[in-house]
Image 1 (cartoon, one colour):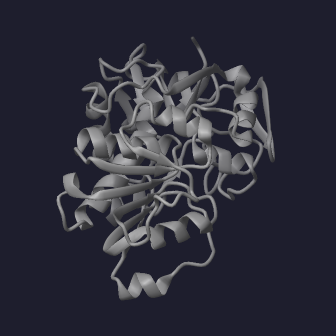
Image 2 (tube, helix red, strand yellow):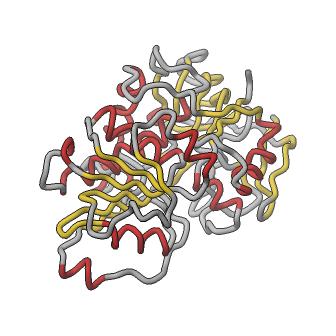
Length: 336
């Protein structure tokens, strides 16, 4: 099969690889589309010790069952593979499973990803493609589930109705935009500000999201002003912006993984009882709920997605790296 292989820092090669072998309890998926995630970019930059080259990245995947129980069925994949037996799995928090692995990782166990013509995955991770979602759009289900999980974690901690709060979203990439769309279109939140230094990406995101778009140094970002802050970037400076901006008693959701350490105003967090929540992935129920949201078109048009062929994947990564891509999300099409 043809695959886009991560071979070294900032190096991806489109080349021939061995087809995955079918094992008991799994199906072989003929990949149709696979999205580029921020975590794929972390690996590309050499900043993810769970993704060591050589490796086929990609975990936002849709396709058709090629070998398995329901050959020919159009599907979307939940790439989070869990044991189903630990306390986390039994409690419905599968994303915190002690033995969790994800497509496109090779630590702790190798799982080749979806930037290829074929991928193998457990049958329990396969979901039927919703009838109102195209197979090329379907990889957006995975980051949308991440956003839904993050928004609803924060919603549980906010003392006011979510319709009446002031929200700051840091980062206008796919996760930031999806958080904004869920807040505005699903949760009916009216007062949203989104911040990003990339003018092209901001302009594109604001075509679909009813929000105020500003740069990080904007005077519109007032300290102690926001009930709910979502940091979808995860840099030291974005965490600092989050803690400065949040109101006393407010909530910060930390989604981004770009920079794992750095200074943070713990004095304010303590004296003003700021709730800080780290969030990772989503539960199975979140994923199922996301598919219903997408099927019902609750977050509106997905025309903000850009599509490129898998063999153009290396240049797509370069464009994201250089900041020259306006689209919040690039999906690579494979067997079209």
